[in-house]
Image 1: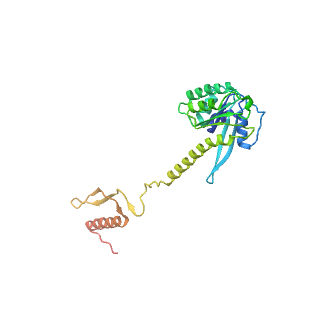
Image 2: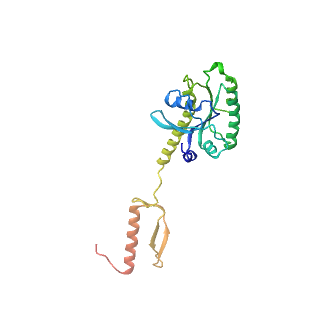
Image 3: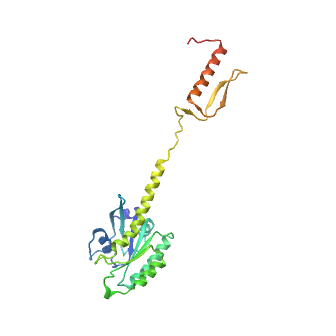
Length: 250
């Protein structure tokens, strides 16, 4: 994908893990309900999936990161900062992938101390004879980093894939709905127009004639209705005409 686009965009789910742990297969299974094994791990792809709840639809964005990009690279730092949630992936058939995930987590923490919600996933759990990482070890890591979920998945057997992504998707959708409600409340607030309305004049300055000097003075008045204003203006006009010796034939 376009690296400039990667730097600018916010992502709902950022998927990070070691080389060959099955990140891309996991994502494609969630998106298309199919298993694809031979995938170039050096390519980063931005995927989207439309999700819905209570007849409300939302386009979920998922960034499949390249395992060859260093965690301290500028592009990776931007991705971590811009991600709403994180999916950390290791392989149950590779102890090193879990150990490396500890290092990845420490780097993420140094870049973004206030962590977003995280789900930890152990892939390839269907390969029982090749297992090197126990469920307890994966769960312990997940617990230590205060993740919101831990799943052992199999993209090939299509087990727990939807559940892992759905845990984060629910959080993203809940936040989106809260933002929409906040926007609706903001729009419902009526801002008073400073222009004087037809029915009321607030804090008006009424010009009246001084009885002692005949000069005009300004007196602040409380809010008055339009008929009251017209009455005062009529009285002032009549007084001015009387003092000038003029008369008006109505």
